[in-house]
Amino acid sequence: MRVGFIGLGNVGSKLAGSLLRNGFDLVVRDLDRTAAAALEAQGAGWADSPAEMAATADMVITCLPSPAASAAVMEAGDGILAGLAARTGHGSDGEPPIWAEMSTTDEAEVRRLAGLVAAAGGAAVDCPVSGGCHRAATGNISIFAGCDRATFERALPVLTAMGRNILHAGPVGSASILKVVTNYLATANLVSLCEALVTSKQAGIDLNTAYEAIRISSGNSFVHETESQVILNGSRDINFTMDLVQKDLSLFAAVAERAGVPLELSPVLIDIFDDAAVRYGSREWSPNVVRRLEEAVGTSVLAPGFPAQMVDDEPEVPGREVVVSRG
Figure 1: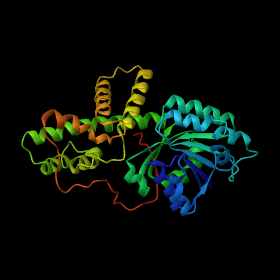
Figure 2: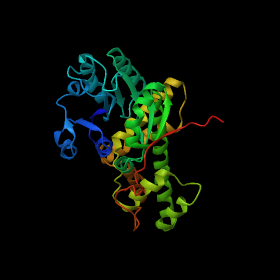
Figure 3: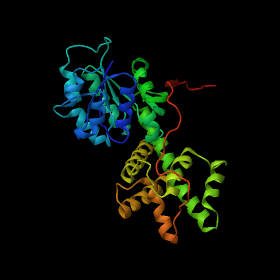
Figure 4: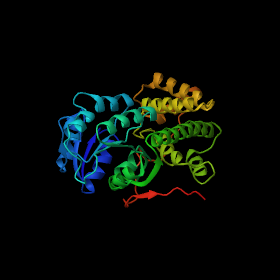
């Protein structure tokens, strides 16, 4: 299967690397050609435009920073839709080419673009990832996939090369909803951990001890075992920035608004991150939201023995579909 990959940022470069490592015929593209250098050195091809890529690939993956960026790549004169329209036949497997949207995006927008893909003769799946850059690098990340079952089964060999746990979420758009739901939960957890760590420090608790107490308790979480570590190290480097949190919070709020859910915590989180972005910059690492509390009480939450960045020390294993239990 020939796979095209557009968007070689923090996450995209690692996902593309997993495809290359697992033997796929890979063609890549990014606005910054240098971002593709390592992949090209390992054997990936280069496409001069999204249209050129879409004209020959069996699957084209986009992994971009915003819905607007995805729309531009899809709908430009030399975009993916133009490449699909120019095709004279199906892919190497005799089936319609697949557009796979791995960006964190708006479910209404991904459904709109999926309709355009279908009109151009293709199939669409939204398949965002969850689990952090360190797990994307090892192929151990989780992937949600929104599409019809036939498209899911065709896409599954590619998805299992990039991720460990693959969940068929439902129709197109469902995966994007679940992605912003889970990112919302992670953000709420991050803010509560910042409060817990600063409060522990000010109450006289050793921070190494506080970390372990949380880790072995009912308060533990994936966010604690990753982001608390880089907070305590001082690097605050989780490869995720304030502006991306702001985007995710706004996407979750939009889903809730369309569903008629009156949110109470969400507006508070939006205010916290809006303030942090103004204070420290929109491209600051998101765990540095803790600085708001550190500055408020005149302290710093630092402790020895924690890593500056998270590294996935689990071996890469073949991906699999997660089957939903229904009782």
